[in-house]
Image (cartoon, rainbow, N blue to C red):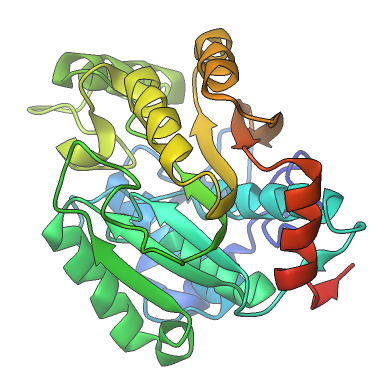
Length: 316
């Protein structure tokens, strides 16, 4: 796949299309000849992208039943796995170089969507527990169906519906509940027009013909998954404001930041909020570069106490 992926990412090698088709036979319909020789996937077709990622999560992580409505966002498995590994490394830096494993480690996936992808991969790779939250009842219902079909993962993953679309952490975390890290892929776009423009650029980048009718993003996605008033920056600023309230119950808050131009304002907001440490973690998948911004409010003494209380079971 990419030499830029994390060393522990199982998706680093070139796609083994034969093995992937064995996992998901429907993928065969979306394989085409690559200009110059070889085979590839019809990445301009959202159905082909979904079948590919279903095959990847089956082949590499043993998740054999992973389905959700075609209209929902289909996450790219290699990139989501990379984010988890990068977060694991960040946690290890504050745990004598060891990655805490096992169900006592709890991650909070904000906007888990219908696919529940972070919790599924994180549970397989590190045995972590997860809470997945979302504002869309249909997405939560789809995620619960995935858990019903994957009883092993269902033992350590729970889903919570956020009834207030203007809240992120509030209403989701309980008193006395401790979260080791959060993850989030925030809505990128501020409007439907912005989302459509991004789709057109993506189609041009793929050098494919513009589809007829509605502009289709090749990764699909419902409005609440792609669009938030004010876009990515406004969503993250709200996240920072709410994180202050829960600063003693969460070690690492984190979110993906798609646009590098947003980083100065995000850092400024974190400094005003009183974050004791801010980390920028690069992510590179193929030709796409992004980053995770992570922050904590815990002082050194509180960090050490957290580590001793929760991170005893570890792996190199």
